[in-house]
Image (cartoon, rainbow, N blue to C red; front, top):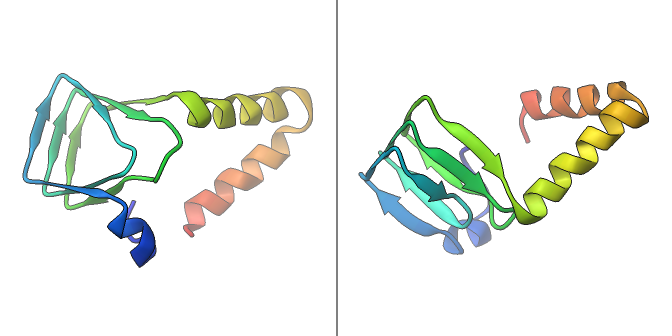
Length: 98
């Protein structure tokens, strides 16, 4: 994920040149640059979206908690209970980028 407006960027904590190995990393409110994530659990809780610039990922596992988990649960309910095409269309928009 790159970009974001200047206001969100200023709300992020800079993390530069770090290597994370087999650990749990909370992503909310962080700007990662030149970082490496090796077999980490990457946690997003629904706060300020993280930003990744020139980062490497090896076997990451993404986990959604709190508000982010609520969003995933809602999308699952829509997909499985209302109409899967709504969620497929949402993913098409995600693939195009914001």
